[in-house]
Length: 405
Image (cartoon, rainbow, N blue to C red; front, side):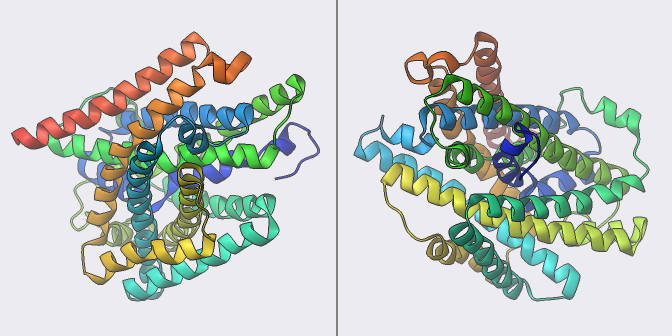
């Protein structure tokens, strides 16, 4: 992204990371949450987006100050066994992410053109390879421009319905009060959190900021880049947060109590019936852009994690071929795609502490961060976020084991 303003000209990396926050897993979790529980879980999205702003800024700051990605910093502090085990959990989270993104794109192609899901997944994988080829051959700035273009399509696709949907704004405001309604709502809250605070985006952003701006020994230049990063993250995550909240509000207003909306396809049909076929098409196009962009960014993130922790680099396109397989297997096995999307987001939520806890500890380390170490209020906010994430997952386990409803 370029601009006549020096500060605005530094924007871009956060918009790539923000794609992770509007992927098809978000669509499944947010639509399901709104259709089943109305406005009840609005507070979860608001809290998750606030956490996302904080941790993405910290990740980018870590990359700028140290000149290394989060996985690289961790690799320098872990032994060989520790690095391998950490990589295994990160790779499992990345696999769950890619399954969701590939499935979402396949569903979109099925809605738009009636293509079989496996064929749609294959097409999404191939097109994502072309997007990744842009990064490999044309550089990060061109890649950023492509991703920002897809982000704009996603925003239009998921925000359009909100303008013609009869949202109960009083009910939406009531949804800001933290509460649950049994095990099912806790499961969906964990799913929404997993879909909104993405571990692979936390790992990736430190590398994006480092690669975009490079290292600098000038305190003034570094401070300017950190300020630009703060603006970058604020703008990008504000857009992503608005899209997520809009999806839940749309579902709460138009899908609550409507039969058959427990799948993305069913929700799309209900949206098209209640809001018009045009809105239905725009929604499906937004879902397709979401799948294409997020699976490309997710593959890029996986490469950053592998190279940082294992110090092994494989070509991005080869990695893309390998990581397509689990998603295609899920589609080929006939597993309900929306259910697979929601479960994948729950898996992601359990991977968040492994990214969050080291990040918060590192950005609070004065020996590592120097003058840019986290301030006391930032540490309090960050550890509160960690407690919320871990607490929600423990609550999910407890409610599931006891069978509470």
